[in-house]
Length: 538
Image (cartoon, rainbow, N blue to C red):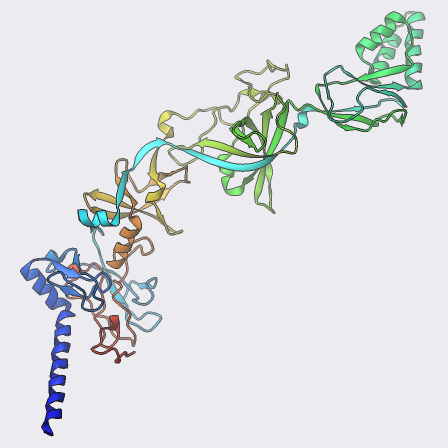
């Protein structure tokens, strides 16, 4: 009876020994690979523990996850690939060209040349990952610059009515602000002793000896003091002095300010009214510094006001301020808008869109209006030659810029869908399908985003298929297998668990079957593969 406990203890130790031997056989990469290659040519591995290599499908003995086929098992006996660099198993971003210990004191593992870094997906795996592709094609792209602004008076269409002589306001024809007046409308009636004297001087010159110089001087004096030519002609014809003189509006516009008051005395140079022609208004846009290269004089701008939803207005860029506002990092851009119906009111906030065609080089296309002529009051007027505006007869102004229009070929841009691009902030990556089910990462150089597409500057050719859906899953699979991916341009060691204690990492016996080297399992901790959970060692 005393020997029974001893026998039971021996049986338990024997069973534990057999279990340890079996696990070591499973975890031996070389034996598994040899067996797998010698029988079926296919090796099955775990996506979480790449060191597991079994000759048939099943579950991972460490984490019980379903095994997946390991790419390249049939070539496991091929020549060892070239080691490109060494990488830390705990600090994936820490690499070295020579074998050494990482910053945590652990041996770095070798990373082998992955060749074409190709990943093959079966039809079933592709359907499960919802991978979809789209071709890289040439198309016309438009970059949109969106900005906000405020409607303001057209400074070229402002006028001030002031008294050029000292006198008294006898009558107000325009007695409140906001009144619209036409050119030639009477505004105010003034009594001025100086004007009475000047009129009498003109009559004396007419009745006296012929002296054309004195006569013309008297007429010019009255014109300079605010009388119209018609008023002077009436004085010469009727020879009757007017004690009160009426001042008329020099432009069409709206009274924006009124300082004249009934029966008040005014001095020479004192402002009586301020007029603004609202048939043309300005909008100053705040364009951010990074979008300034897309803005050019002469570009057409779409303006939207909350007061008129669904009714956009059209304007043209006239002037780009040469000084940057440091507080907001923006530049003021002047847009001239024809406002014949006067729907836009000064002070309104508006949102605008500038649509700029994109060239194949990824830059803004020129407007082609440089060197042509337009009107300050009517920006919709664009003429090839210098002259006067056909609407208001104002002298036309030249539009600065290049007069060369881009060709259709220059506007056909090689474009890539936005959803195909993986962006780490430092590099942009797409996954190209070279043949059915075979994907390869490709680093690309792109221009600024234009709607749902990026212009391709380098890295792709027309007609190539890129993954537009499921590309994050593809990238994660590349990371699992240690292949080059978005955040690891040179690849990384497979995620085969973590290892402490500075144990040396041993490369697998069949490097062709594992694109990136995995450290040999360290007894007691890596992947929690110890015989007993209580033996968690460091």
